[in-house]
Image (cartoon, rainbow, N blue to C red; front, top):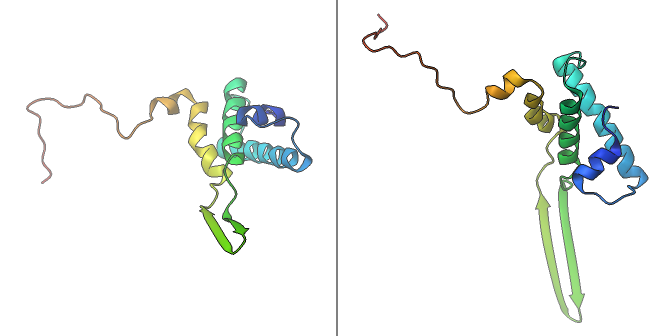
Length: 132
């Protein structure tokens, strides 16, 4: 693994030590993120290792920090009164979707093309061509 569980936990601000289930969950997520990057880019040896570790660490930390999907409710009863509070969490974002937001940081030429549009100086006065 390029990134350790402790690196991701530190990125999340999680308390140490992690429980066994949380640690295994992060290990699998790190391995999945590495496999997804290999599927997308092929060989990863040409990338800057520090940048590669940062992308994996950020993506896995963001994925792990999401609240669980489903409904959470809390009921309180005092004497004859009863109060119920209910929250509904949206669906969790997949690790692949989160990783896709970050993998543009791996290649400098992809980082330069960010934005909604680009402006290139191609206009020349007096040269208007209309389709016939």
